[in-house]
Image 1 (cartoon, helix red, strand yellow):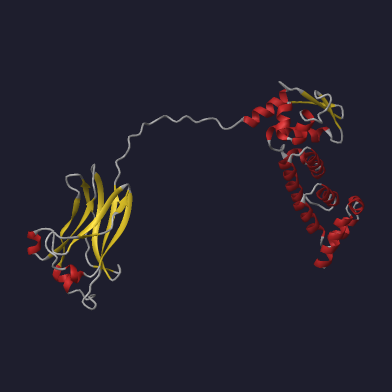
Image 2 (cartoon, rainbow, N blue to C red):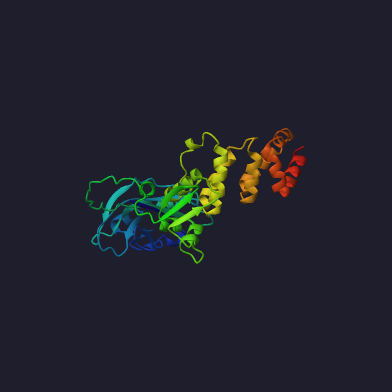
Length: 338
C-alpha cells in the first residue's frame, strides 16, 4: 500500500459562491503509486437535486484511468490553515475505474455553514480540503521455493589444509634447517616482498629452495599460516613468552609487507605491555613505525615510579642506545606529567 496526503486550499469562497450547479474548481494534480489525481470542489453542488439542498460537493477524481485502481480515502474540510477540522467523514474504500473515475460527497457541506463561518475576514473565506489517499496494490503471485541452507564459507580452511598437506607446493623455504613447503602464486598474491623474490627482476636465482635468515621456525610458521588463513594462530601458543613471540612476528610481518598482520601484532602488544618487556617493545615500535604502540608504551612509562622500575631492566639500556630521540620524547612526557 502507498499513502499520500494532499491539501487543496480553496481561497476566497465568497467569489465562488453562485458560480452555478455542476461548476467546479480543482486542485493541482498529484501522483500516488504512478496514478494521477485531483480534488474537485463544487461550490453550488454537483447536481441540480443536491443544489436544492443547498450543499457544496467534493470529489476525488482519477485522471485518465486505464484500469481499475483499488483505494481507501477520506475527504474532509479544515479551517484556519488546517488547525480546525470542520467535517469528520470516515475512510471509504472504492475502486476507481474507467467507467467510474470519481468518488466523493455530493452534499459535502451545507452552504449556509460556509457563509456563516466565524473565520470569514473582510468578506473573504479560505479553507482546506484534505485528501488522504491510499492505493492498495494487487498482491503478486509468488512461487514458493524450498530454501536450501548453503554451507558457510570455507576457502580459508581449504587453503590452510593445502598448506599442511603440501600438495601442489612449488617452493621450499629453509628456516634454520627446518623446511616449509608453500605455493608461490599465493605467496606473491599476499606479499609484495614474496612477489619480488619469486617473480620480480630481483627474484632469487633458485626459486624452488630459498633460505630464510633472521627468523625462527615457529615465527615463520605463524607467518605462513597468516598468508593462507588471513588470521593468526590461536593465542594459546603464546602462554609462555607471548610478548617476545609477538615482537618477532611483528618484525617478520613488516619485513614481508604483511600490513594486516603487523597491525594485529601491534594491537596485541598494546594489550600486553608490562615492565619487563616494554623497553624492547618501544624500540620495535620506533623502528617499525608503529605509532599507536609507541604512544601506548610512552603513556605506560610516563609515571615516575613506573619509569624507575623500567630503568632497572636489561632492555632499557638497549632503548637508550637505539632510540635517543624516543628517550627525549619520554622525558618530556615525564616532566609534563610530573
